[in-house]
Structure formats: structure tokens, C-alpha cells
Image (cartoon, rainbow, N blue to C red; front, side, top):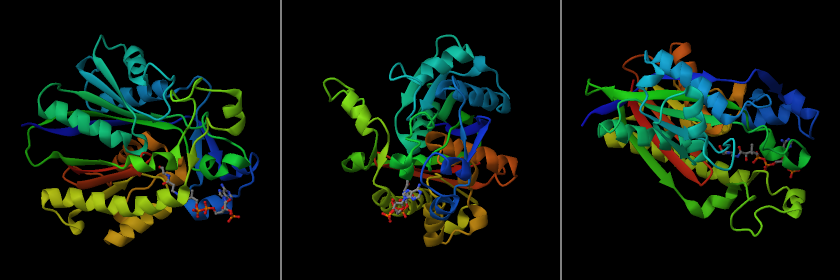
Length: 331
Ligand code: UT7
């Protein structure tokens, strides 16, 4: 069976930079609180009409270019987001239209912070089974229009930022290279520890003025429980990926963890004994960009020269669901 690899990485970041000091003007928070608790210094906010699909399309165009391909070479689109342009249809079809690629299939993935890895696992299977040759995997989020930018929503609002990352996945002939394995997990009993309650099809009607007044359309999070599970599940997932391939911690050249909180990642790398210079961070610049985080990190690591051919890269993510996942890649 043919293994798959990431052939090209692209990104798109909205121009508008929002600092912690900017948020101080909207809610009772402080630059000091945000930096100390999360490591975030600033994030990007999308402009009007700059939806998840448009940003994802721009990231995809760069990924295709960097893979040395043309958009006609793409066989399938996987789009991961928790902030689709519309309730339905999914944003994948909008990307297909914006890219202008004939009638290829488009699949939306709804797995929040692990959405990119879930999407990558689907692409990996299509390549391995030779169903498709080139699959786009996009992670794109517009959080800024969904968070409550006021004191009531401050625990969540300060964490998230907008952005998009994309990769093209294709076959690799060198047996030692490519995506070695991907490991996916979920624990739905914690679904309500990080969620947006409304609008929801369980309600008749799905959305009421009362729900809006109560802010049920904004994300709510049990931050401490998310933190507690993240620092347990991410190390577990990293070890699972290493064990599956007969590697050990010192073999990792680069750890690419999801960026929810710098403190989570410091804890995870510390407990596993992975030195800080092997860990990629972008949370200080972009906040938590959810499904876009991992491709954005890969992009940065390629740019700064830390991600080199032959490197053993371990990727791990944890987020709403709860869902968590890891991947081991020989770059
Ligand atoms: O990718 C998705 C996953 N998300 C995560 O992984 C997030 C995981 N959780 C966390 O990162 C942390 O729980 C937070 C950074 C969200 C919060 O840190 P914490 O140390 O758990 O703070 P806390 O929620 O216990 O709140 C401490 C205090 C509270 O005030 P009192 O009750 O001690 O007076 C909060 O009201 O901080 C207050 N607070 C804030 N103060 C200033 C909460 N949010 C803010 C804020 N600015 N933005």
C-alpha cells in the first residue's frame, strides 16, 4: 500500500491584528492576565466577508503552488472547521467553487481542534488505497464573529483567533517517508464542556430571542476540565504514535502541538522531556486558530527552517468533543 505525504503547505492570515490591549477596551481583562495564563500576545480578526471558505481557498491556492501542482491536479477536498460560513452547506463546496475545480468531491469535517488531524487521516486513507492522488486538507476558522467580545464571554473570547492553513496530500514512493500513522480518539461525555449550544436541532424552534439574550449562541467552556484532560490526553497520544512505530521520545525532531494554551504545551513537552527548541509555537501571534493551527505551525516551521526533509515530526491535538489525536510523520 502506498504511503501518503504532505506535498505542500499554504496559509492565509487576515490582516487585522488584535492585541491583548485592544481586548482590554472591549471587556474586563488585561494583557498581563492573558499572557500569564495562555501565552497569547495577539491574534488576527477577519474582515467583513472574509469567511472560512475564502480564507481556506487562499491557503489552498498557496499549498497547491508550493506542492508544484495545478488546481486541476486536486482530486478531493477535505475542509475542517467549527466556524463554517453557513449552517449548511459545508464550506468545502464553497472552496471547490472558489477554486473553480470542476465537480470533485468536498467533505466537511466537524472535529474542532483535532479537525485537521481527523481530515488528514481521511486523506491518508484515500491516498493509501489509491482512491485519489492529490487531496487538499484545509483547516480554516473565523472565530471573531462567534465569540462574545464582552466581559461575560472573556474566558473564551481572549483565546481564539482567525486564520487558515492547508496542505496537499499525495503519494510517496520512498517507504521510509510520509505519514507513518494517525491515531484518533473521542470522549463524547464531555461534549458540553466546550460547546456552542444554540441554534440546535434539538430545540423547537432552534433559536429563540431568549437564547440570544442568554448568550447560548456563544461558545462556553469548562476551562479547568479542558486543561486537565488536554495535559493527560496529549502525552498519551504522542506516546501512542511513537509506540506504534517503534520510536522513542528522543527520536522526535519536532513536536507540533495544537495551540490552545502555551501552558498546556509547556506541561506536555515538560512531562515527556521534549526540549523547548523541538516544540513549535504560534499561539503568541495567532491565539487558538483551532482547525487551522497545525497547518499554520507546519508553515512557520518550514519558513524558519526547523522542518527539514527527513525530520521525524510528531503532531498532537486536543479539543472540543472531547476529541484528541496524534500523527507521526517522516518529513
Ligand atoms: O482548543 C480548545 C481548548 N481550550 C483549551 O484547551 C483551554 C483550556 N483551559 C485553559 O487554558 C484555562 O482554563 C484558561 C486560560 C481558559 C483559564 O485559566 P484558569 O487559570 O483556569 O482560570 P479560571 O477559569 O480558573 O479563572 C480564574 C479567574 C476567575 O476569576 P476569580 O473567580 O478567580 O475571581 C475568572 O473570572 O480569572 C478570571 N478570568 C479572567 N480575568 C481576566 C477568566 N477569564 C479572564 C480574562 N481576563 N479573559
